[in-house]
Length: 223
Image (cartoon, rainbow, N blue to C red; front, side, top):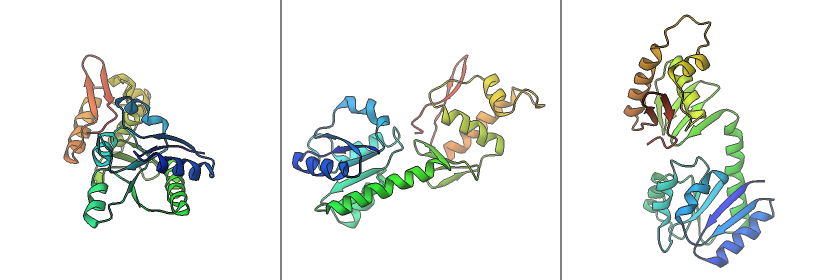
């Protein structure tokens, strides 16, 4: 069972979505207007269905604003079917489009396909914002750009990303990544962070924040 957020100003559409997805055992939260408080609840949803034509904030804008705050699939619900509309939606961070009018079977199939893919990927990769770590290959990407991390840079980045928001001192990073039995200099962590930041910046992201006098943390957004 997944927790799905459906956002549409058409309440009849929301009722249809809720009844359809409940058949697959999903919990569906429906809202017809986007409120500021919604930002604080995004982490509780496994997938978001988002109407493009909303009265206050359009779906494109909202998707762009939240894309760095949640890794869950975002599927647009829209009557807009022109190729340029679809391309623009993907550029805002959408994962898929469901064009209105749609069938109940199509809705259920698309939603469940994205949820299955997310479940598979969580066993082999980890994402924070637009940075994705492929655990088996020990590779990291920012969007479509592969980050040319060394093994040590990859492990440091993964440690901070998995614990985004938590501050790590140089000593804690050294202990978690290398262990105290390894011959190395804790001051090297500073150089590793410097190199990691350069490679992230080249890909257009800057998620690592320095907390002066304490250490470093991954700020979560990645922008």
